[in-house]
Amino acid sequence: MTIKTAKELKELYLSFFESKDHKRIPSSSLVPENDPTVLFTTAGMHPLVPFLLGEPHSQGKRLCDVQKCVRTGDIDEVGDKVHHTFFEMLGNWSLGDYFKEDAIKISFEFLTQQLNFPIEKLAVTCFEGDDDSEKDTEAYEVWKSLGFPENKITFLPKKDNWWGPAGETGPCGPDTEMFYWTGKDPVPETFDPDNKDWVEIWNDVFMQYTKTKDGRYEPAEQLNVDTGLGVERVTAILQGLDDNYKTELFQPTIKKIEELSNKSYDDPNYTVSMRIIADHMRSAVFIMGDERKISPSNVDQGYIVRRFIRRSIRHCLSLGIPEPAKFTNEVARLIIEQYKDEYEELNKNKSFILDELSKESEKFGRTIETGLKEFNKMGSDNKISAKEAFLLFQSYGFPIEMTEELANEKGIEVDVKGFNEEFKKHQELSRKGAEKKFKGGLADDSEISKKLHTATHLLAEALRRVLSKDIKQRGSNITPERLRFDFNFDRKLTDEEKQEVEDLVNKKIMEALPVERKEMSVEEANKLGAQSEFQDKYGDKVSVYMIGDFSAELCGGPHVNNTSEIGHFKIKKEQSSSGGVRRIKAVIE
Ligand code: SER
Image (cartoon, rainbow, N blue to C red):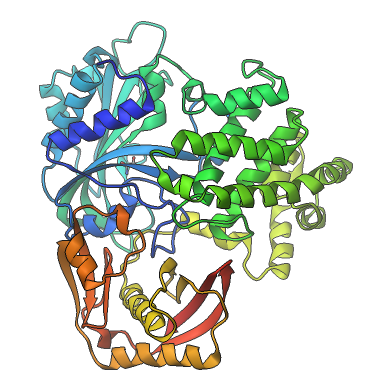
C-alpha cells in the first residue's frame, strides 16, 4: 500500500510499533498536569517524564503514540512552509528496555520498508561528543552497518544532537537525527545538514543522563529511548510537496480563507497571512477544545489562545475579510470536523470552543479597527512608547506581541520593557509570568512538589466527603509554592465547609497513612471507586495511588511515601474558575 495521507501515516506507524511489541497509548492533554514550568505539552516524551525517570508504566516498557503538541518558541517563524505552533508528533519509547542499536534498526526498517524511502535519499547526524558525554560512535557504527556511507553521516555538537531535558532538569541525552532529501536536484554525494533541502524527519534520543538542578549530567538509572517524528512534515514528503500547508491537514482551512477573501494562496502577497491564520486557528481550536478546556484570557495558556485568535483576526482583516467572528467560527467548525474522529474531545467541547471563540472574536472585532487607526497615528518619532503600547493593550485589546509585529512591519521600535512595567502596575498576574514558564524546567519531582501532589489527592477526596461524592477534578497545577485544584461545583464554599475540608486533610496527614502505588485492571480500579479525570483514556492496566483506605486515584505519581511527610495543609483561596468550576489554592506550611 502506498501511504499518502496523514491518517494513513499515523496508523501505519502505530501498527508497525505494535508489531514490535509496543503498546499504543492515547495522546495526553496539551496542558501538562502538575507541571508548573511549561504551559504546553511540547513533545511526546513530556507526559512520560515520570516513567522515563523510573516509575513503572502500566502498559509496560515499550510504548508508542501520536501526541498533540504546542510549541510557542517558533511562533515568529510561522508563515514559512514548515513551521507550526500546534503539531502532531509520532513517537516510540523504550523505558529501560531496548537501546541504541535496536532503536536505530527499527527506525531504519520503518523508513525504508514501511514508508519505502530509498536509503540514497536518507542521511543522519550523530553526537560529536564533549566534556559531558563521549562521541556517539556506537550510533555511527550501527548506521554504517545498515548501509550508510561515511559521507551521509555527520557528527554535530550538543546544540544540534542532544535532546532534553524539556525544561531545566530531567532525562536527556545524545540523539541521532534522520534527514530526507527533498530537493529537485539529484541527491548530493555528501550530506550537508545546513542545506534546507535536507529535511529532518525523525529524532531518536538516547536518554542516558539526568540533568540536575546544578547543571550536571548524571548517568541515568534507566536507559531510555525517546523518538519523535513530525506528522506534518512527513505527510508533505509522502505527497511530494515542499509546503506543509499544501497537504490535506491545512487545505480545507486555506480553501475557506481563499473563498472568503477572494484571494489566492499562491499570490505571494497573501500566502504568509493565510498560513498564519491556518496555523493559529488550528492551535486555538485544539487548546480551547483540550480535555482541560482553556478560555482566552490574560494569563498562562489562556493568553496564548488569545494571541492566536487576535493575530488570526488581524490577518483576516488584512486579507479583506470583513466579518472576523463569522470567519473564525466557520474555520473552527472545519477544523473540528477534520480532527474530531481522532480527538473526540474536540467534538465533546464543540459548543465551548465555538462560544469562547465567538465571544473573543466579537470583543476584538469591535475594537481592532479603531485600534489600528490609533496605532497608525503613533510612531512619528520612530518609537511606540510604553504608554502608547499600553493604551493599545488596554483600550483596544492589542497583545503587546501584536503591537510589536505591527511596529516591525513599519520598521519602528516598541518600548516593550516600559510596557511591561506599566502592565505590572495594572495587573497582578502579568504576561511575564506566562512567558517565564516557557523557559522553565520540566518535571519538578522535588520533595515539595511530591508533598503538594499527595496533598492534592487528599484535598480531592476531602471535597468529595464534605461537599458531594460527584466532585471530579477539572484541572490541577502545582508550583513549588502552592497547589491549585479545579473541580466541578456550582457555588462558593462557606467558611465552615472550607474549614471542614482543611481539617479533614490535616487529619489524614496526622494519621500517617501509607501512600502506595498499585497496578490493576480498569475493572478492578472501577470496583475500588478509583477517581480518574479521563478514565476512558487509559489502557487495560492502570496505576492507582492509594492513600490508606481514604483515597484511590489513577495517577502517574510521583508522591511521598507517607502522608506524615506532608506537613500542615492550609487553604489560601477559594474562587470561581469558570462556569460551574471552582478553584482552590492551598499551601503546605
Ligand atoms: N523529544 C524528542 C523531540 O522532541 C524526540 O521526540 O525531538
